[in-house]
Length: 381
Ligand SMILES: [Zn+2]
Image (cartoon, rainbow, N blue to C red; front, side, top):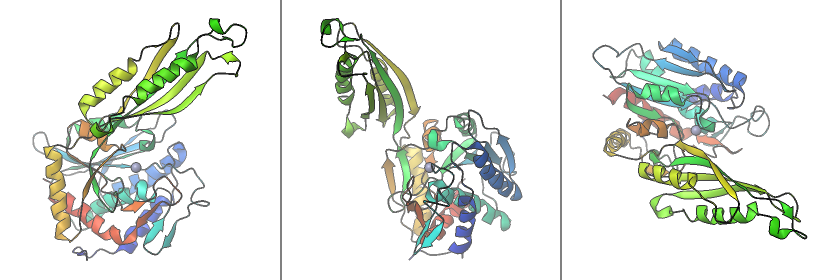
């Protein structure tokens, strides 16, 4: 049985989370996204944080960077950097149709409740709880709420990178994994498009004049799939294919989309070089590759282990097991870890069904996870 040393109760925490879930905020709807940002900005300001509002661009919503008023005296102060994304994958209307907020037994359902409004709220609420008691963490706190994580943080990455320069630790509130585990490493990823261009001809009367883009792509696909090295943590997936026009035309064009996952920085360089360097196998056909590494690998190191062991000890003190996992999926923790900031991820709500119409969190886990967040903020130094 978990010890509730702070005397917290789950009902007000869930009520706070529900207020955030009730403001639907898909990545692709900047006006809706900004309503969510308005709400959180107001709540962060109410507990004394100075808020920098970064206007959205490229069809995305705003981001906010919230800075604690304390802790900045002295030479080169370093902060606890907290990261939460407030965008969800669910379109407007999900809340009224396919995934209304509801409680069934120990589960609370709603769009984005696990990924990651539940965790974002636990982060905010830990700071609020301390503020109301006149307490403050030993280190200054910078809290970035961004609006585009679900599509790769393309417009917020610079902001997270900027804040890494004055960060001592990064705490990321993605949902807890597989029974509440925290994440101490994630694979990096890349996206590529491979295009083959051949020469069209009549497949019946002039087959010898044609150069088949599909035949060439078949060779390229076998090469790409052959790059898989799962035991070393490299996976390459040709996920889509398009090509040709009619059965009796030697196809001029073919293209595929490729997802790459890597585990170490060395694999990142090597795999990007191999994929971008693909060469034609058949005669008179062009092969071109576009794409890049989109997330650096988040590799566990000694400093991350120290941070994890610290969190595990805090959790053990309330009889709350806190296993760690490595996961293939990416998050903003990839950005902070790749820049050398010791990062602990999946500190958010414990739940399941993210990105689906079964998305939920476990109400009985709210108090221990809230306690852990408060204890981390109180003890990190
Ligand atoms: Zn997420």
